[in-house]
Image (cartoon, rainbow, N blue to C red; front, top):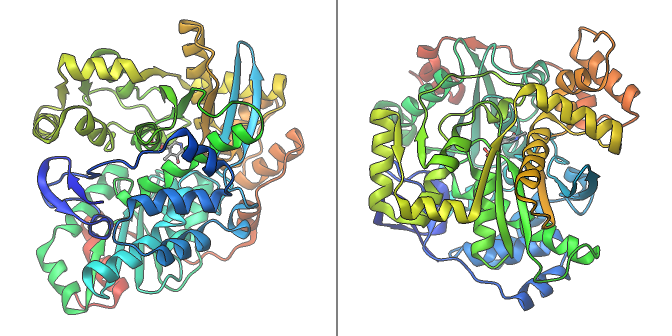
Length: 500
Ligand SMILES: *Cc1c(COP(=O)(O)O)cnc(C)c1O
């Protein structure tokens, strides 16, 4: 099982090279050359396994140059009851609301209370093993630019992992107070955090520049280190996400909600297109999925793309209450297009996107998009209405991102009448966005302090504050460093103890 680049079919790498490298040299993303195929009998057998068993089966089929032992060890260290609250890291809540019935797949029971944990708890294990295989024991230096959730999830996943150092950059005024506190109090001996005086794009551009800076790369090489990336285009982040769609399907079978072989729909609040693409991959492997409902907030570049076939990133930017979806360039969409049309055309689309800010797919691709995808969006006002409605009528509290998906899914059902059972991805704990959620469920004046809001949300809704967030209140602040964008290279070298 090998991988090739979305922009050049002749660049072929092993699984461990794909994970260690993160991105292909010419800018393409790594995709599997083929998909393992599961019959209904295979899925039936998978239903008898627990989450870890299902993960071992699926990931083993993709990681050609990993031993069974390496896969077992990675899975068993990542998905523990200690880290995810139970042996099933992604439990389902069944909610009926208005004209809809939803299997809400809660992906936020991990250490940072957002769905990124599902991949970032296992990535460090896959990555260190990959670096060992592909680069013979060099120390990996992970740099992350974050708008909030990824940074914390990466820090928590990589903390105290041997053979890795990690540094996270976040925009000084661009993350929520809770997210800031999560990062500033991070524990671990191999972690570093810096706030940069700029926005998320500045942080991301700064990191990309360091990755490709020949001078800095040479300095790392002298010290037996190399850069690697934990961002959402790494194959090692996508692969673990395929598992929970199979697992959710199996859980629904076990819980008597569906029969093996019955079709489901999947609805996902989408930003970088990773989570929904993982569901599409699951379908390619044999999971009976009929339709993928792609939910956006007011930054609805994907809604327009799915409706018109034109991807146009030149538009007004909205800062919304679902910040993890405030994205204009959905990187993983490139992989979907590759599977629908091939490397040559994808290279052309990506070139047009970077030169002209947009591209249009042809009729054939548009027809494939129409067959599988339905896109919709939900603004902040309707996000809050949805949170309030679910809480007051179904006694279910959800976060802002999940509410976007619920709202868009309800639009889908209203428009199409399609009542196929749905797996709806719930991507964050409501407590991670306490202010927006509290505003939705109460008319009273909000307290000023973030932790007071968290307490109030718990008191009002009689739900428990997730332990990792409750602990933050009294955690020691370790990182207060701030720097300008052009000081980022020096900050990285300083943190590695290398002379600039
Ligand atoms: C990252 C994130 C998303 C978007 O997921 P993609 O895979 O980038 O589409 C949605 N919700 C939350 C809470 C997230 O952290």
